[in-house]
Image (cartoon, rainbow, N blue to C red; front, side):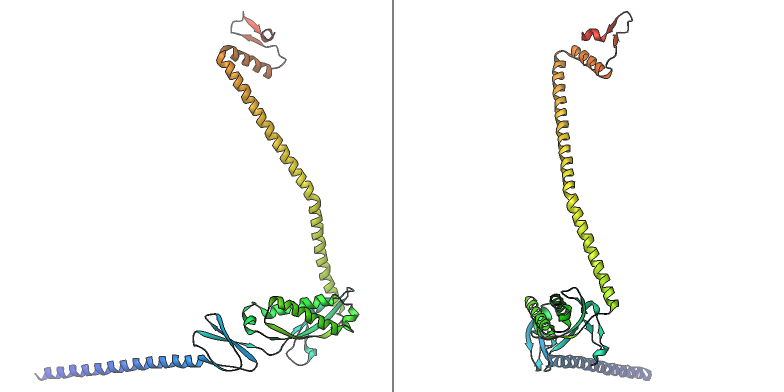
Length: 328
């Protein structure tokens, strides 16, 4: 009896411990859920508030669609649904013809001969560097109208520069015409950008440096130009050869086609004639089969063995009939 009471007491203690453990687990679970919810709410609040500096504008998108553009200040957006993309709207610079070193010392800048080497009106070479100043005028257009707006701007600038430099003599480019060149390049660039609508405004473009290239660079550049001219010459020769040979080839093809057509017509006519002759022979054969068969036999012998004295025998050597007697 005493042992039974002891066992019963231990069992009750285990039940009490299990209940306490369940309560602690439930409390811990509730606390964990509370912490997660609090973190989500805090992150949502934190991500929904954003600031835009004086040098920027923010483009707000909702599921990829632009819903607004915000200027400088503190703003609110719907968390997890709206996104903000900041765009620098201050005046920025782009070097054309050289690479900036990142310092204020222009001596440390390195030339980019592929962009800086130009050919003038009098077919001279000049190494000229430009500096383009621009700013983003329409952030929405800048972000979404063109895949690579800055690369497009660079290419348009280089094209405008080369087109303008090719109209001036080398002495003018290096001395008296710099102002006119800068103005003309800017006007051309603005006109081209209006066609594409990059959302960028050209502020200014200026010549940084203009000098004759070194002998090594000129030689390399001439080698490239010579290769290009050689390729163009080869292409022109190929086109000339094509122009000369194509009419002859077409004439030969027409001749072959006509000959084939004539051959086809002749074969058809010949076949039709043979069919007609066969039909006539068949009609005669139906009327006089034995006579027609002998006549065909004799005609075949004359065609196969011409100019020969042909003798027909029935197996009896006493009766021999020369074929020419029948013909006569």
